[in-house]
Image (tube, rainbow, N blue to C red; front, top):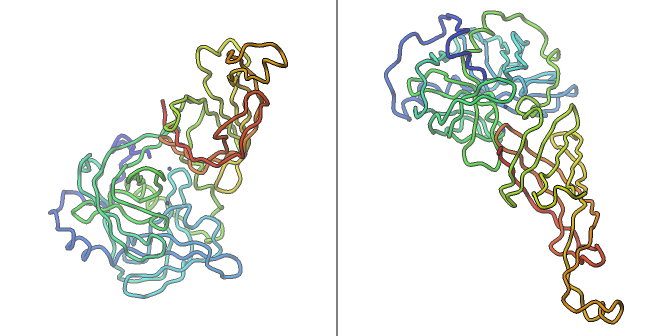
Length: 364
């Protein structure tokens, strides 16, 4: 389905494509009619010509320049663009590619195509009504609307437009439109598990790409890790929404490490809950190992064996190891699932059959 707004104008590039003055607001239906023909479906294929991915984009100039996300076309050997009127164009090449901000401009051999203009970001404010058009899950030119809910900065210093306009896989690369029909941003990613937590690259960067475009073959765009740009970096403290426990999280290249913050009463002991994960496709997969105290009360059997009084409080320290995987990481949420016991026989350090349970962590 993870920026720099550049001080909302510090790196502003004057462009004839930029809307210089605020335009009259339109109704939602009027806005759709005026802009939908400029939004395209991009189908990416591999070496054999087999379609392997889909995304969205929009026409930024009548001669066939189309804006999308870098991750939509990364690693592609060929691609076609489908317009709203049913016309198809083969992508001739890439004019600009910005991995850092997840933007790309491709070129098709079109003429007199309906193009969109860029918004002046300084006129976009929190609370403004916006609209997203794209092809989520291949459903071409789907329309959703919402508001600008914030301007966010991630751990790498990149800034994003946060919006409540719903977006799904396939919306990537589509425009986030101000109600005057100009492009405020490019829909790029979302936080799964949250309600309408969607993020767009500010359109400021598109002008810069257009000014520095240079044609290159489509296959020259390297395949990217679509999650890498949106990950927290360094060690941070996260809180589990399920248990309320705090966890330290650190990313080091392909590895991710977690460690539960031990409660004060156990900090002078050998207790630990530590996880080690390695990147595997779109997930982080690994093990969580624990060494924690488990209390139990002595039974009649203990009395006859040891003479210990029935009901005496005891503690047994147990080692356990569980499979875990993290499926989604952003600056505001970590989600995944892991194995755990519903019950433990503390005396034997044996657990019931492990069950998979989902978890969500948020920054402390």
